[in-house]
Structure formats: structure tokens, C-alpha cells
Length: 219
Length: 225
Image (tube, rainbow over all chains, first blue to last red; front, side, top):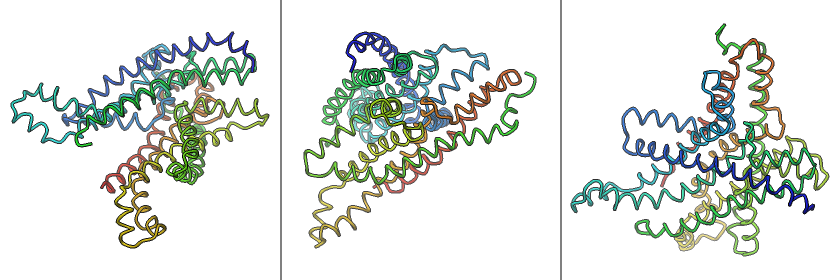
């Protein structure tokens, strides 16, 4: 193990981890927005839109992110739609993540029995109050564990963006292996970088999940 | 647009070459699923064992495999094994090893959660009916576990097929690589080739994975208790 090598090239990994984190952050935020919209459409069975959202979910869940990215990055410019690598990565991640987030949010909304809404109305709650005090907290207890699992999934999925010329962690590791043949050191730093990115979120999510379990009715 | 770019698919053996490329990754996923099924069942059984030590070891394995992006695992085996152990693995072998490791972890976790989801009163009732432990497992626990296990295991096949698309990044010639070759060879004759070819690959993946997802969902609905 060459500590000097690690010391010398660690800044490259820090920079690359920043890029990974940035792409993942925007991807997660946008997929949450898409997910909430689609989740509500699916739950309230909005006519027509419901069909479109259904088709989108099937398409995005049954194709790999790598293929989606290739299509966005190399295919779409032929239609005159030019996106930068980073925009492509965020768009691809949103396309993929949106459907996963939608399913998590919908399953939370679907898990609430209609009697909850009816009881709230009979107690004189307004629809907004019902949403805020009755439905939202209960849906959250079901949705949040699934949403955090999706976040971890999406951060992991960003590892393929090196295929569309983004200098992320994978790219740096491969570059160092190619340039200096210090494979062990390069791979060790790669693993440590991903652990630093993912472990805290994984631990926080299991803590949150444990806390939320009390919020579920009758558990 | 001199003529429709999609005609590139039917030029020569292009479409067959794409399908051949797709078969490479599907083959890896099928081999990996077949091997990781039995291994995953063993792992799942080990994780429900009483030994704290075995449980801890399985836990560490499972957590490491699940938290690392699959591409990192591919790099570790493909680049790391060569350097550290001096074994020269082909991209195909490394891919199979990685996806067996990953599939075993995922399958093990499915088996574990299916086993612990069986309520304790099922064991108690079987005992009250005079069944011995083997009969309990064979007639009471196993049928219920299989029902809970089959839909997510079928789903694992689609995840496997989607994830094996990564092997192009360790230099295997599969569908995306073949696509690049076709596009580069026809750069001047068919300038819009990339749109059509990547679009077709997108659809091909969908056509493979979608029926499997539908089957998994149908079974889940049918066996919902």
C-alpha cells in the first residue's frame, strides 16, 4: 500500500465525490417532485393522466439507466435537443427515480383506509386539515422508508455517469489505474469514497425508519 | 433527411448483431440468477440461524455488497483481482462472479425476510397438531415461504438484466458496444443512426423486462394473503 500515492491523489476523489453528490442531489430533488406529482395522479386516479403516468412508470422501471443515458446523450442531439453531460445525468436520474419515488408515495397514500378521511370529515375537519393532520402523517410513515431506500439506490446509480464523459468517482479510479497502475490504492480510495457518501444516509434512514414505525396505526 | 435513419437497422446483419449483443448480457444474468438462487437460499437460512457469529458475518457481507454500486464491485473484481491475486479474469468471468455475489446477497435477504415473515403461531399450531420439525417445515413453512418468495425473486431477474448492462464499462462487447460500432461505421451515410439505434435498444430492454415484471406482479396479486 502506497500511502504517498493515496495522499497525493485523494483531492481528486474529493472533487469527484462532489460531482457525484451534486448530480445525486439534483436527481433526487427532481425525482421527488416528479414522484409526488405522479403519486397523487395515480392515487386519485386522474383520468387520462393516470394512463400516461402508468406508461411512464413501466418504461422507466424496465430499462437500465445506462441505456437511458446513452439515448439522452447520443440520441437526442439528432432531434436538436442538446444537453450537457451533467444535464443528461440529472435528467436520466430523474426519469429513473421519478417512477420509483412515485410508487413509494402512492403506496403510502394507498395504505390509508377511506374510513380515516370519512371520520375526519365527520369530526368537522376541512379537506386541508384532513390532509395535514390525518392523511399526511400516516402516509409518511409508509412512504419515508421506501423514499430513503430510493435515495440510496439513486446515489449508487450515479456510478454509471462516467459513460457520458463525466469525471465522477468511477472515472477518477479508472484514470488512476490506467495512468499509474496503482490498482489497489485507486480501488481502496474508490470504496472508501462511496462508503463515506452512502453509510451516513444508510444509518440515518434506518434510525428514521425505526422512529416512524411508532407512527403507523396499531403497530 | 435523405431517408429514414431507421433503415440502418435492416442494413446487413445490424439487427441480428444488436440482438447478439443483448444476448451476451442476458446470458450473464441468467447464469448469475441460476447460481445465486441456491446460494441465496443457503445465505438466507444461515441468516435466520441462532449463531450470533454466523449472523454477523452474513450481515457484513450483505451490507457491503448492497451499499456498493455494482459498478464498483465489477471494478474490484476485474481490475483488483488481477493485481492483488495475479489471476487474469476475463470480463465475462468477472461479470459472472460479481453478479453471483450480488444476486446471492439480494436473494439471501429475500429468503430471510420471507422466513421471518411467517408468524410464530404457524410453528405452534403445527406442533399442536403433532407435526415434527421436518413435517412442519415441509408442509407448513415451505409452501408459505415459496409464495412470498417467488414474486420478488422473479423481479430480481429483471433487476439482474438491467444491471448487467454495466459490463460495457469493463470493456465487454455487448449491445451498447455493438451499437457504437454500427453508428461509427455509418457515421456519414446515416447521421441520425444514434437516435434510432439507442432508441431501439431502449425498447428491446423494455420488451425483455416488462413481461417478467408483469408476471411477478400477477403472482404477487394472486398469492396476496
